[in-house]
Amino acid sequence: MSFLICGKSNLYCETLYHSHSDWEIVCNIEGKGYAILVDKKIETTDRTVLCIPPNFKHWSGSDDGIRDMWLWCTDFPM
Image (cartoon, rainbow, N blue to C red; front, side, top):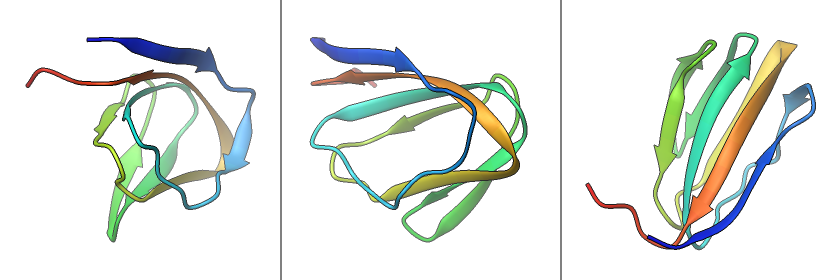
């Protein structure tokens, strides 16, 4: 597994609907929110982890704000 980039977000309320060419692993570390993965809405809370496959359209948001940590990698052994 090759790690490409990792980071920690500032508190935010909404992302744009987007996709990546690599795996994205996201861990919500603060706040309650939701993620839209293609057309499915998933509620998120502290310590929710999402493993998003390459080229998978997604979006996240919150009424009160959330903060997360994320990691992009080229492959993800399942």
